[in-house]
Image 1: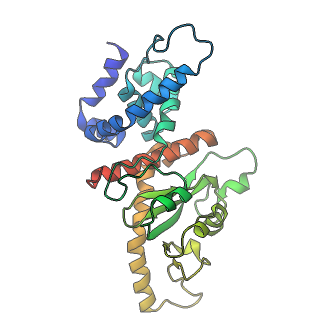
Image 2 (image 1 turned 45 degrees about the vertical axis):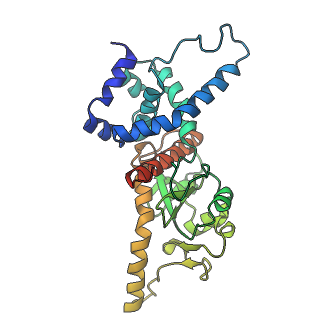
Image 3 (image 1 turned 60 degrees about the vertical axis):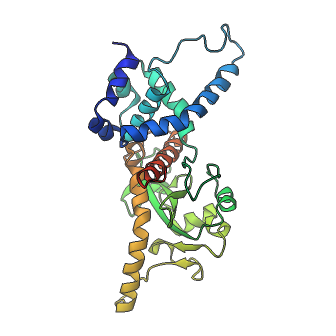
Length: 307
């Protein structure tokens, strides 16, 4: 049996396919259809850019894994699991370089902000930059912030800078911003060493200053000290005292609003490549994290009937 036919067999058992990728076959097919044209354009540019070509464009050896659908499947499986390239190569019965080459060419395509056409996003392009987001989404009203940590292997140098006292582990930290209305992750900061505090990290990436004053910000106790006129933050229990009943009710109400950002983090960390201990380069981790977040956004939109 040829490799591409072997890979296609994974699509036959829908329950098994969803367990492997977190996508249903229908969702995956929709994702593949929306990305395939961009893939073809990128491939054409890549092939035409070669200066040492001996054959015409398109006359080289095709991908051993098959068409774009199969390449996307392998890439999503790379993100969904913590399996090494070598193990994936054994599973798909191909060479290590075949898997590595496919993943590294498809990942940049998935890292773009992938938002299907909706009532909110109709006529608007994909966004990765916060400044572009604010220009394109004037209806943005309420944003929930949270910092999330990703465990890493113990670094050889400057270990203290990466050690998180909260997690008792060496980590990388990213800030995540979620639109309260659509429940979409609208911002993901580049990873930083895990020792940094949430408030200091947010100030460093300068998101708060760039958001208009009319936009409400919500956060947990990690953001105490942010401007009270724009931020909604829980009450902190005074030392040696108790919160009033009114303060407890307000904290409970805010917790019900903030839970959506925790769900957004969970949807991203379903992809174990970023959810478990990181053992890849900073560049590849950043690429994988952005791809996982955008895939999580795509699933959320489709399952809410918006995709």
